[in-house]
Image 1 (cartoon, rainbow, N blue to C red):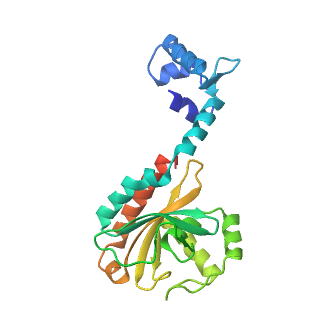
Image 2 (cartoon, helix red, strand yellow; image 1 turned 90 degrees about the vertical axis):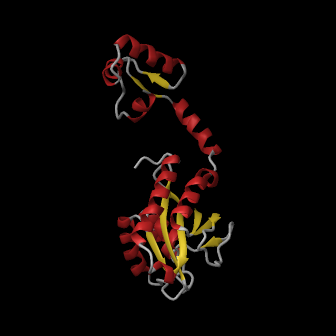
Image 3 (cartoon, rainbow, N blue to C red; image 1 turned 60 degrees about the horizontal axis):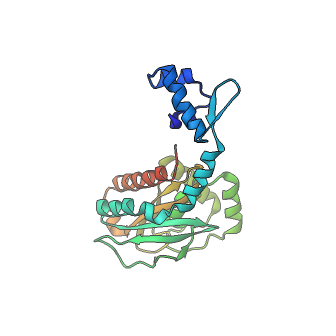
Length: 239
């Protein structure tokens, strides 16, 4: 009932609640009154109800307790099991990404990544997944501030070309790093969104470029996107 009221675009009456939940109006009033007494609802003069600011207070308390790494852990492990590849969880920090988790799979290759390490966004699978979902103004500020330097043999160093690719990434829902950040390494990344529908992090899987030719990239991308969708929902993302 509370979820229904929170998501309603207009104040809710007891009559509406009774109809929606197939109960008597007297019972609807009783439940609404309980929620009102618990300070979870505000009662208007016309006897309709809206969510109270107490819910905002609860939300802020919950957000402070959320540990993204712990919350994402089982989903990252599941992704590693499905793909057999190294899985990275990266949070956006300024103009860079920071590795906060790395789970090595049975087919892992020696890689430079390590927990706590900072990495560029423009030449990585996770980074491009983040950049593709930034507000336009924020993306423009990023491109003005960050020099696109050559890192791997396929690094995109032209801002116009990168923006064109980011548009395609946003449509697909995932990004590819095909030896752009590190020669011989192929990555697939997808974004993580928070309760405010803002991109805050990303997950990627990494494999050798040669192995990428032997697998279904679309299938693996589907696994990555499913992982990030589940994590995003746990953070309150509704889309």
